[in-house]
Every structure is written in C-alpha cells, then in structure tokens.
Image 1 (cartoon, rainbow, N blue to C red):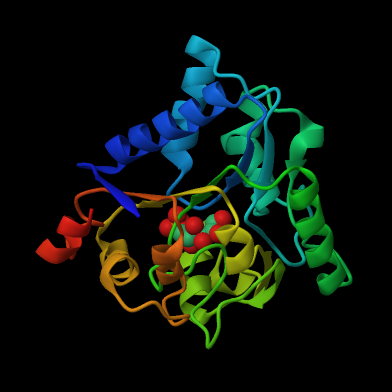
Image 2: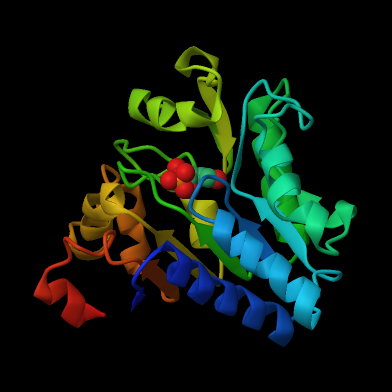
Length: 249
Ligand code: F6R
C-alpha cells in the first residue's frame, strides 16, 4: 500500500481526482469501480470541473458501483443510483449503457450477484476501484465478520452502519436493512484500489487497516495483501498512525 498524506478533505479530494483523471487520460476506456457516501462527493465535483474545463473524457469509460440498497428502485431519492447521477453521471459525458449497479430490486439475490460478477468480467475487470471506509473498517457493505466475503451478495447492515447512514434519510427507521454489495473478492480483483479517508471518526479504522492484523473483523485490512493500493488520508484520518505506520508508507 502506498499512502498519501494530505491536510484536509479538499486536498484529499484533489489528490484522488488527479489519480482518476490520469487513469482516464492514459486509458480512456477504463473500467471504474465507484463509491457513494460523503467521502467522494468533492472528488466527484473536481472530476466534473476537469470535464468542464479541460475536457476530461468519460465517453469510453465504464462504471460499476460498489453497492445498492435492497428494496430501493433506481429512481428512489435515497438510492445509490440516484446519488451517482446527481453527484457525477448527469454532469459528465459517461454513457448510460456503460453505467452498472447491483439491482436492489432483484428477487433472486444470488442470481443477481452472479449477473453482476459476470458483467464486471465481461467488461474486462475493474481498472481502478474507488473506496471509502466505514468507522468499523467496512468497504462496500462488507461488514466485520468471521470470514472475508467473495463475490457480490446480499448483506444485512449492522446497527452502526444504519446509524451512520441515517443522515441521508428522514429518520433511522427509513434506512434499508439490507444491501447488495460487491464482495471483498470482487474488490480485490481490481487492478488498482484507491481508498480515501477523511475526518477523525475514520482514524481508528485507518490505523487498523494500515498497521493492524489482517482479519475479517477489520474488512479493509485485507488490502494490505493487494499489490496496488493507494490510501489517501487527511490529517485527522491519519492522526492515529504511529511512526512505524508512517515509515511503512
Ligand atoms: C459506499 C460504500 C461505503 C462507504 C462507507 C463510508 O458506496 O460502499 O463503504 O464508502 O460507508 O461512507 P462515508 O463516505 O459516507 O463516510
């Protein structure tokens, strides 16, 4: 893992935008794995700015989102589908037929998981996977567990994840209890993984991920084994890293 230390959320977003822009410039038909949540919002704004000002081109790119809530239709205001359109897709020239999400309305979750895995494979695999991190070090919706999940699957959300995501809903009881999520194995197959963390509430998860034991109790810790991970932290998210952890960088 390579780690980039930045001062604050904006500089973290700036560094991440440079990496994604370089990916698209070097390989215009890149397959991107994208994330929702608060973390990538400013990064997406910066990508839109690059599209508007210097013609960053998404026309040949393909995107696969990490996850979607079970029971929400793509048009639902709280769906991740809608989030991505509002925060990125509607403002750049990515083509609709190259945008993929797990289907939160699928009757057969196992079949839907397989369909999503096959679609990623048919696209040639993910070149660059963007990730945020949960306070419990979840990635996608892969929560702390007894073993690392493999492929796209249905997951029951943990209480603290429901509580953390309640800010996007009218109340906590409106947060769906299940989601479809890429598995850790799906994420791990990406050629390059870009993990972003901002804010003091992510500091422990960053420390455990970067310096801790590799264990499914800390889902992101598996990334220590991946050959090409870039972790970008702001000052607060990197604040618990020890001198040893910093040396590893
Ligand atoms: C989002 C996702 C989640 C978030 C994580 C952090 O698609 O899969 O793993 O990246 O929950 O969320 P924020 O960025 O809101 O702190």
